[in-house]
Image (cartoon, rainbow, N blue to C red):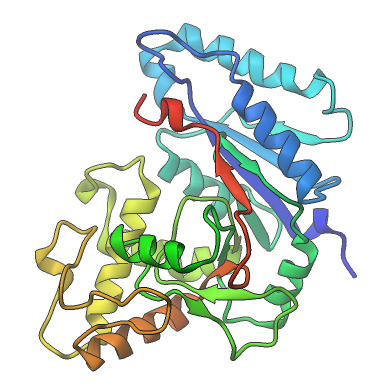
Length: 305
């Protein structure tokens, strides 16, 4: 069996917080994020690839020099002796473009962990088992780590906030790790199959949300959702379309029921299309009903900054 370091790399996008007001150069969150991921996910020898947003080279060049120096200093901090850190110098502007660079040009492993610089881990996760499920099930493209407990409240939140129109246990695949079927790609911590990103996710995003049409080119998650909504449109023939929405919400006609038991409320054609979309995109979330949170967000305090 190949070691994880040959199968998996970690993409860590980062940026200077409060660059125009109170620059947060000594970003303790990224230190905590990497330390926790390395320990809780057992990522010995796995490469953590840090991608600073190059937009700050234009707006705050001196701060960027300081930030790069700080990121390099992480390698010599306590606890990092055996962590494989790569601070990438030739980065691009915006998270979307850095993700594209990592996936299409830089990543040398078949799988990646997407890990923004402000996430923590509640419990240990057997990443090797998840990778085994990817290896044994080519239809899996993406597995997210759950931020909230898997319960009816979570299912209701998924509906209320338009996170997912499917939220139900996967029972058809042979899995070492239990998973839920979900509808949408998220920027929360997840594992993705690089070939699926290259051959399917990226072409779909570029087709339906090219950079010139993206209002928030840095927001990979929203751009991907626009592509997913168009995907669902292409699979149904009931006359309803997400094309009239703002690209992030489709009310009423496709509204699911909470609890993960029914979707496409009131329209069987919509339900069929959403299920086809989920299978086509291979989107899943780790866990069983009753499981607690696996990750938590360290950066709520600076989310809008």
